[in-house]
Length: 169
Image (cartoon, rainbow, N blue to C red; front, side, top):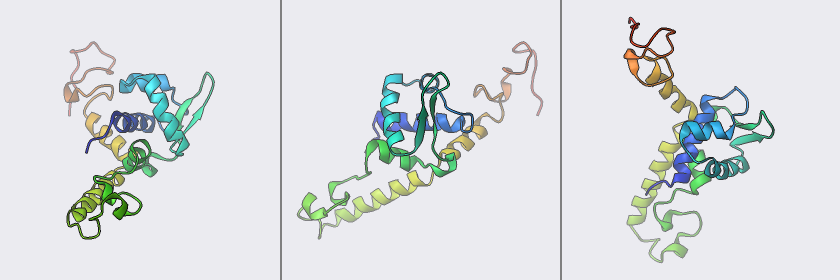
């Protein structure tokens, strides 16, 4: 089972909005540039996320998209299910009557495997919020200026010529 670009790019776009949560609408062009995703494709994804109530949009010169709820209240599972649909590794564990999908569904032991897989995937995706991703980013850049991921050797943002100043622990 693989996520399509819809799910992957959609999570990246939502993560970008979470990083800018509380700053007002984020122009789609800025998100597209930062996440290296086609602006046109991102517009299609954002339309679905807006219809699902995960983002709001505003028009005009100061317009853009922003999260409809706090990053702590939006999970990766919420985003993936909107953009990819239900996470069903086999037809017999999809919503609806399993017998319609497979005549052996009632006595099939493999159905138990697919059900457990579905439950595990959903549990993991639902356990990670956008805030969790933002917190991970903060941990990654805590040893740098925050503009890059160079770590303790980073000299960007220090106001001095690169290479002339060293951070002390």
